[in-house]
Length: 448
Image (tube, rainbow, N blue to C red; front, side, top):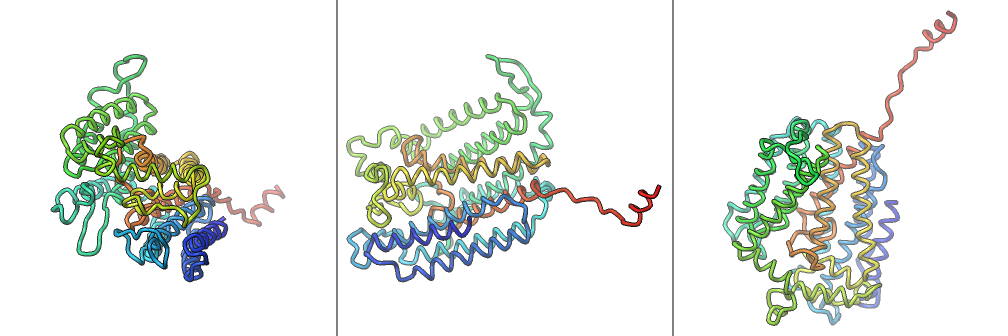
C-alpha cells in the first residue's frame, strides 16, 4: 500500500509537468526518490518499533503528504518556463523542495515518537505538565507584538527573521494528552446527573467548572489572537472528549450553546471576526467581491470551474486565489481534480479518522482510548473547519489542511499525531504473550 501511494504521487508529479509545459518535469526522479526514501524510513521504523500497528495509517498519510507536495510544486511553477499562468508572489521558487525538507522533519518526529513512547500510558504521568505546556504554546502569540505574530489579521505565529512556527499545532497534541489524563481521573464525577430538562439529564452545577474554564480560555484566544479556528479546535476537542468519557449528551448541548454564544459575541466586538462573519453571509455583496471577500469568491469560482472531473493537474488557474498554497489549497484541488478528486481526498481523511477511532475501540487502556479518540476527532474537526470555510458552509478560519497545505508546523504535528495513533494501535493489536512451558514438567504431569 505504501508503494502504491508513492506510485500515485509519481504519476501526479508527471501529470503536472505535462499539463504545464507538455513534458515530464526534469526533477521527477529526484523528487520521487527523495519522497520514497523518506517513506521507506518510516516503514522500517514501523516494522521495528510498532509492527502490530494499523497497516493503513502510514500509506494514507503518505499519499496526502505526497499529493500536497505535488500541488505546491504545480503552484510554484505558475508563471515560469513560458507558462501563461500568473506567478504567486507569496510562494518561493523552491517551495516544493522546502516542503520535502519539512516532510523529512516530520518523518524524524514520527520516528522519534515511536521510539520514545513505547507505552501510551507513559504520557499519563505528565498530564498537568503537558497541559501547562499546551496553554503556554497557545498564549505565546498573543503576548508577542503584532510584527512577530500576526498574519492576515490572526496572531497565531511566532516569527523570528525568516523563520516562522505556529505553536498551536503542537499545543493540540499536548492538550489532547492533558484532557485524556484529566477526564480519566474525573470521569465518574462528571458522569453524575443533576436535574432533568426536556428529556436530557443535565450535569450538576458544581461540575460545570471545567467546561466554563475551557470556554473562557477559548474566548480569550478569540479576543487576543482573533483566531476562530484555534478557538474552535481547542474547545471542540475538549467537548468531544468529555462526551466520549461520560457518554452524556448534555455536555454536547451545553458546549455547543456556549461556543455559539461566544462566537456571536466575538463577531460583535472583534473587528477581524466580524469581517469574517460578514464575508460568510454576503460574499457576493457589491464592493466586497474585489475587496474583503475576493479570496473566498475566487476559491468558489475555481471549484465551480473545475466541475465534476476538474481541468487536470497543471491546466487550471488556481493561482488566481490568494494563499491557495496554504489556507485555500483545497480549492486548488477542486479546480484541477474536480468534485471527484475532492471526494477522494475527503475519503482518505475519513479513512484516517476511522482507523484512529478503530484503534480507540480496540485498546483496553482508558487513557489510550480517550487519547486516540481525541486525536482522531481533532483531525476530523480540522478538516471540517477548513473545508467548511472555503465552501462557505461556515465562516473562514484560516487554519491549514492537514498534510496538504504548505508549511512545516502543521505537517510535523500531523505526523506526530499519526505516530501516536499507530503506537496506540500497535499496543491494542499486539497478541498476548504465550506462557512458556517447561518440557520436563510437561512430561512429569503426563506421567502422573
